[in-house]
Length: 241
Image (cartoon, rainbow, N blue to C red; front, side, top):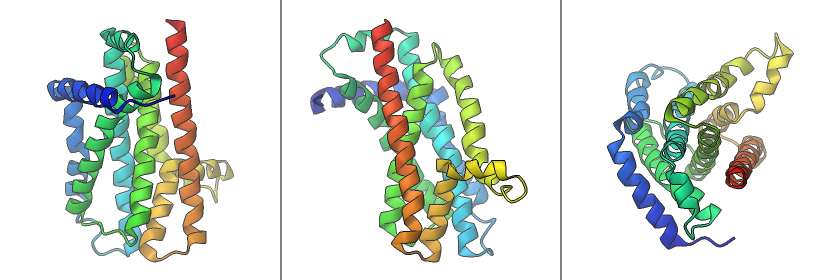
């Protein structure tokens, strides 16, 4: 399936104009900045691993409240206005539409998270590992937001569908800490949010490729799985309409 950069750019520009007029969604961009400002001084006396874990949790919350939420609302808004159906009638392919509608959220999230990292004062030990983790996580949560948006008919439904996702993904790293007392919680350690915490801890405390391989691989598997689910979900809805 070919991807047309011209069509992707046209969808990107269209979404940017709509996003800039929707203050209810665009205001979510300040969430990472606010979190970084509120938390940046709390762990200044703690070991670097604790600072890294704290910033990882800032990222986890930001991915959900900003990246996932914005993507879900953009998709749901298209469905509510029936403009997504019109978009499907154009020569744009499935990948053109999904990449075009995801590119805006990806770019905005990357810029805001970079600003949040500067405000928080977080300095990654290995830039390459940090960038890979952030890129994979952005794609992962954009795919998750796409899925929530596709199965929502209105903006309100999309907003509500994010709540259980936020609860599960945000609480996973904390729930995994209880695995010694409650072995059933061990499964939460395999969530991408938990693996993000592990990756940033390793990044800042020194690691070998053997150490960092597991969190990167698990995040990659989650990213591929959710991206495939988002594409299949879009194609399924296309067939049902």
